[in-house]
Length: 363
Ligand SMILES: *Cc1c(COP(=O)(O)O)cnc(C)c1O
Image (spheres, rainbow, N blue to C red):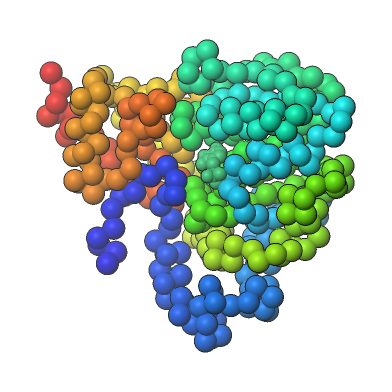
């Protein structure tokens, strides 16, 4: 079975560590000798309690979070957070700064405006099709928070350093780079991530929220849309996405026990991205689309000399067992998504294929 698996460069849902998938498979029919599958167990059972608590503890340990933070598992994907954040955290008279670095930031901004909230776009890289990360941004000192997308999955850019906001808490959509590198948590008031890029199956969104920010949240909202509902019930106000949380726990365990923690994970990710970027930079056939000092370690976007060649490239790659290399239509070209679970072996396989494709098709 495992020898039929491809090198998976999908943007999301994306590749997960093989050892995690194997562990899920091995324990699927009889979870911890319960005689039941993880998807058949009550979320009120001690079996599941152990899973969710373990996932929270591991997340806190990896990111060095203290008791000022709640770790929540919500539904509705990252996209629901685009609405929940302004609904919960902006009251009448409040304002927030948003940085627009791509498709997902644009959606987050549109959603905040739809809620009738007063927000300001403090910086944008739309002038160059979001190919760079804006620097030297002047923030509104009265902003309640600064919202940004740490890694732009579609455009292939990433914040290396987070802006100095003068103490205003940053709210970050980290859907496509959470747990890929250490973070200075002092800067963040809220972090959220849809699971399907770096954490597990789709359908679960991890939300890390600082309690002082939560304390200011609007309470006059539908029960399911209030952070406090979920924080007060350890994410189990209603039936949580049990399978997703279980997988996330195993992925976090994998980072801790097999990848050398978050520092080891970062080292691994830099090595992987370097293999690909070094190869592309040395080639006159392939070209990256993002500005060099904003290039993402998670999503490598690149072009070939023509759209016709790009089409052939993606087709041939697929036939070679290299999947998911087609770029998003808003950028065109190709994209290799190389999240935490992408292996070194997959990087060598990709570069080897790119090298031979270049030789065959260079005019
Ligand atoms: C994929 C993605 C989203 C959307 O996530 P959903 O879980 O599908 O709502 C949002 N932001 C970023 C940065 C993403 O990569």
